[in-house]
Image (tube, rainbow, N blue to C red; front, side):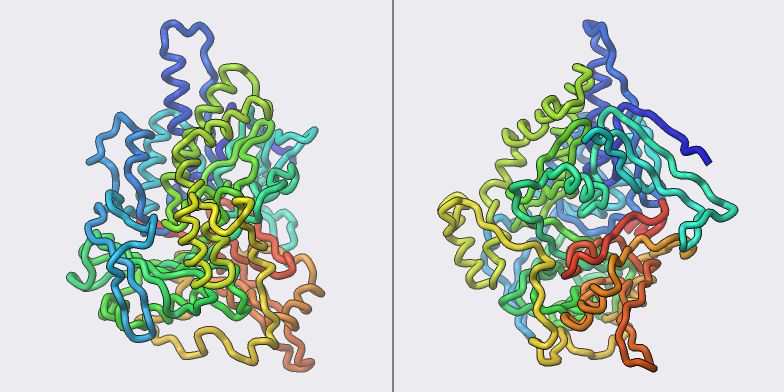
Length: 557
């Protein structure tokens, strides 16, 4: 069957805050140009956006604290009272947890204050941005997975979407639909963290040459309905300490979405050495702490999800452009550490890219040299000024929290340089940090206590609350490259995939006859966090997009 070809002027891949903000700002710039009576030559205004979720916002789980100022820049015509925010931040606490106590710090660690910020349900915010984008003429297509890059002559010429209606072996079924090829003048990579097309693009064009390795944390999050009065609307709590050790980077958070609803979760660095470390288990242990237990007691779990967070900072950003393409938002790694905030930076990076795209359209020049204006404007922007002072933050904590805190203290007084003579700290990629299983002497993180199904839940139960659905007839979107490497990993590291995956995609089973251990895949459980693509010690697991519309369904959460 022939592959249909669609042409557009700009193709945005990804319908999150970055992709939609690019589309909105670019549409505004084009309209303003074309409505100017002094302009004789109009600019083409076809902007297409592809989103793999079944609808906009379905792959974005609620509970984010953002700086609202960026929306005044993106949408100057919209009044601030019309923003779909849940509440301004009214209380802001940082806690240090021991096993049985919670100590409120008398001050906020640098950059961690949330004064002036707001709490949002991210899925609702994205749906709102999507409505605005469509009113401005952007063609938004949800339920479409961009699957393959079409690189011709060393340049990105197009993308190909997934075919549908094929069986697990890739053979067409009666309902087979061929892929679609989309060609554009400019491509915008806005897939979110560790997007597989962005990953392939960076590798193919060596856009990360000379950069620090990108490093990540995994955030596991739940939304709870709680009794009124258990936690105040507008309250934000971040916690350090228990249940992590001093050689592990991470912490917990609780956001008061309303008088009866909270988002709570746990974030842990994927550079943790213990191959049995399980961020989902860490969240369950966190919820058993007396402080957290007092909040969720008599409450009800509503939603569950997981997301990886790019934390490498300024020196881990790849080259942001190439011929006909720009990378924005989480796909590039725009996140401010230690505040752990990226939505406003994603939006600002999108606006910078939109201005560069506008100039390229005006000049009918989509070359690398023309689009380099995006990176040049970034280096003159507030985004760069926010990232520069904390450019070495995450790398300072690569060994343990005590040394990291000391290093960070020196960064505060040296403008971010710290102990580094070059002004640049580095660390290995996350997959390089893994102890051999024999070094743990049988100890497993978090123990093996059963889940009570009231406050703590196993992964299988949590998957139900993620709303995750996949067509099980399709080929697996999680590819294990080598059976031999997998066997070696199980023997050497104990099969860390069974622990680091927050959705029970990887199961280590034992053959009853031979006693040999092997891997069973359950790709239909996947919540699209892509931890497997990041953390596998042998780079043996590759994550790609499944059918469009598959995956978690966070709906209004």
